[in-house]
Length: 384
Image (cartoon, rainbow, N blue to C red; front, side, top):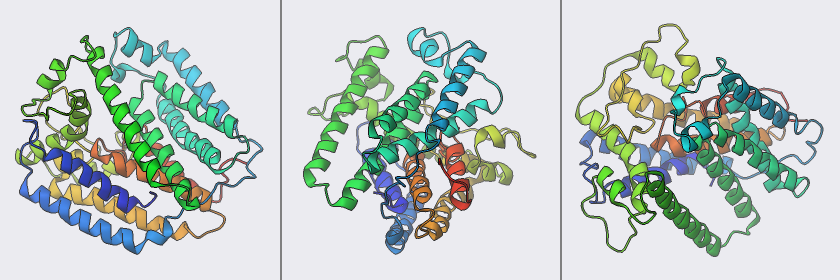
């Protein structure tokens, strides 16, 4: 599924369907204008998806990219090791094992971490894209992909890993669909694997908080659950809360009219935060308020609302739609099909995870997306 318009619709409908289930006090009735915005955006996105669907066909990578192919991997490994040495810290061990720091305390040379994350996201997708396209050097490309993701896990960038895996699966499904090899049983298998992963995610969440893997009292209290279906294991409460609490927080800000009008900060919502906060006229953003501090994300649209009201939300959604349309001009360029594929795969992931955070300003995705955009419109080779 490479069509970004369909990706938006699928994710939005999925999240809203879960949200309206009467199981948690977090999920209060959605604001009426928010409902209108959501329905309108779904209709427009569906229309655009049908109009431009011919531009989102899968194309294999260029098989002849050999010389210098692993130079980006070497650079990523070097920069990561240098950053660990410079900071005298490996965030994964500090937070997950030792529990002595929060990731936000991790400091490095200005822009270095953003640059490393940008190369890591982009070139990990390059390697897995080549692995999916051809058998040539497949094992080495897969190893390169996993090595980059391992480094990002050591940086404690769990969201980077989730987004990266989603991107790889999206490319794989698109490849199988293009060959006519994907059958209903594969969708069922994918669904079963997802169900198992989400169950294990809940078990791990219980254990991480010091409870037995089957003791769900902690998340049940945190999630304000009151009517969980008896036939569904409560381990899934963790996933449910992570998926729906961002929308609940956005709705909470709208109902409390928590917004100002700052046009500059609204525009800066489509720029990587490490850059925007250093640009002229930047002011501290009007922050989103939270229902509870432990669920601290509010979808990718909340800051747009708090800094620009409904106009801010419409602005960032319109920007995403326009970007998706504008780049279709490169879809049939025989010299840019590979770069277009990489761009669309990244764009799909950014759109998919907007339900969670603003991926167009988040340091793990935004720099890579803009780097991919630059590569798409330029004549620079990816790796050759």
